[in-house]
Length: 82
Image (cartoon, rainbow, N blue to C red):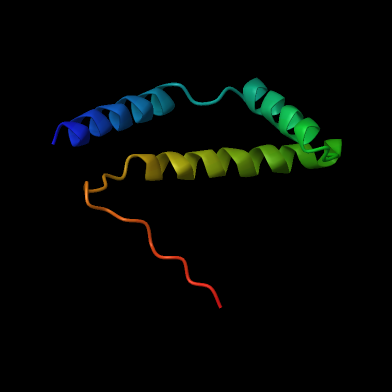
């Protein structure tokens, strides 16, 4: 049971940090620039606002899943191939 309490503490502290300190707009801009550069993906200036809005929504949704408690015996779903 020690593993569960350690994992629960880590999850709580991670979610508390995420909720108390939302990503600053300039950090998202820097992330978008760095990711585009790393992927050699040109992002037109006209699209940067939409990319940033999508990233904000994605991060907000991911944060809601980070708080979801899983039992210790949870297993990933099997992978099906055709």
